[in-house]
Amino acid sequence: MRELNAKIILLGEATVGKSSIILQYFENRFEENIPNTIGTAFLTKNIERNDTSLKMNVWDTCGQERFMAIASIYYKDANVILLVIDCTNEKSLEQAEKYLEEIHSNASSNCTLVLLVNKVDLLPGYREGQEVDERLKGKCDFYEKIKKFKSKNNFDAMFWISAKDGTGVKDIFDFVANGALNGQIRIAESGSKTNARRLLAQSITHRNSNKSQGGCC
Ligand code: GDP
Ligand code: MG
Image 1: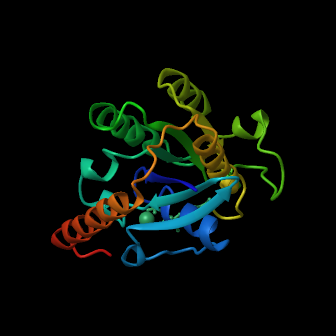
Image 2: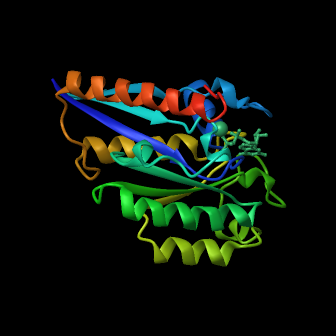
Image 3: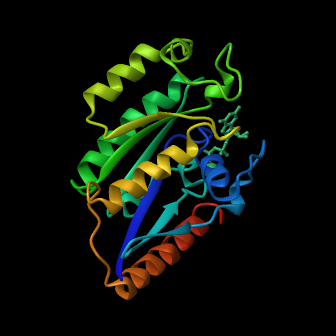
């Protein structure tokens, strides 16, 4: 069986909903307050299709974005970067622009870049289960800026989502899984043992560096 090991990371300003997206995807639930301290370095989901097994390792920042710029070791070898903004907070778009500059200078050029616009449930007139169409997106105060940001920066995809009720969340990871399995998202075949060791080493470094910055994880 062919084994693929994908590193998928979430980046974005504190409070945009990164941990909530992970919680919704892995556990189908939402919490008003997720303490930073329960952040895990990464969670894994395995998907098997035909002769291929895909391991999706989804990384959270464990709150380190609150203290400093994200360490480049976190995203340097990512296969997929999910850059998250909050549609009710224009500052989160400005922060995303800064992250993007860092990503362009540090991440692999093969990396797939996805823009996530979270908290659509807070847009005026939203009803759960309704399609997130152009009219609803237009209710976001900085919709035109988001569109410009998307077209200027070569994103591979964009999703308007709600980590609260789950709208669009599964679509993100389906996009990633399908892309990885059909070869559109570049992922080196593992050497899974070497890869697992590398991931573990990174996870330990990540935890240690967090400890020295205020003890999250
Ligand atoms: P992180 O700092 O990026 O990991 O953000 P969190 O996942 O901790 O979320 C920050 C706050 O926003 C929490 O109070 C969440 O409950 C809330 N939140 C996250 N996603 C959504 C969403 O889609 N809709 C709403 N209404 N609130 C959300
Ligand atoms: Mg978080």
